[in-house]
Length: 255
Ligand code: OOG
Ligand code: MG
Image: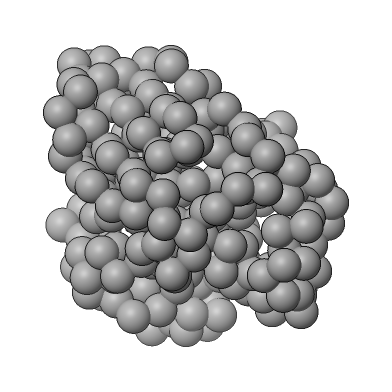
């Protein structure tokens, strides 16, 4: 059996040092279950350093993302407070390997959410919904897609930025979303791209958490997944996601 702790150690070091490493699936065979075990260990190392678990991110919940990466399955990752980027802040490229940004929608839970749940029950557990962006960063060099490698690498979780929270008592099913670099649109989409309605991503998060023996906790943030393909970040740009009726969220990028 592969040394999962050693793999987790290498992934965590690569993320901390912003240094690319070779993929693992080239050398070892591991199942998706093994990959989630590695992810748990990777995030466990962050928790040992004092970071706090604060949510869950969903991946590959839109056709655009599935097509970009050539995949048909959803995946998920664990969010910690160490990954929070404040709305309006700047981030340094030097902290990442090859970061990309995705326009997303975030949910804040006011109470625990357990599966099974209906979409209505999931929405009833939501305190707020916000425009958001995820900064994903694969730690692998010359990455050739492998779901196991992505999952082990915490589904490329690297940073997330959340804009103003709004009450969820509004239509969320088809909100226009525009990702801009320096106020020029680079990706245009809709919240409908996220499984038809972003609340479906929340229900899926509750299900996948349940399968992993976890519960979505009160106070957690759930990132519903990119509504469009991801865009590579570069130094000097201002990045903004504007979501119809939810407002904007932004950050800028330095060397
Ligand atoms: C995996 C992460 C996917 C999303 O929103 O679909 C994701 C990747 O693309 O590297 O975060
Ligand atoms: Mg994402």
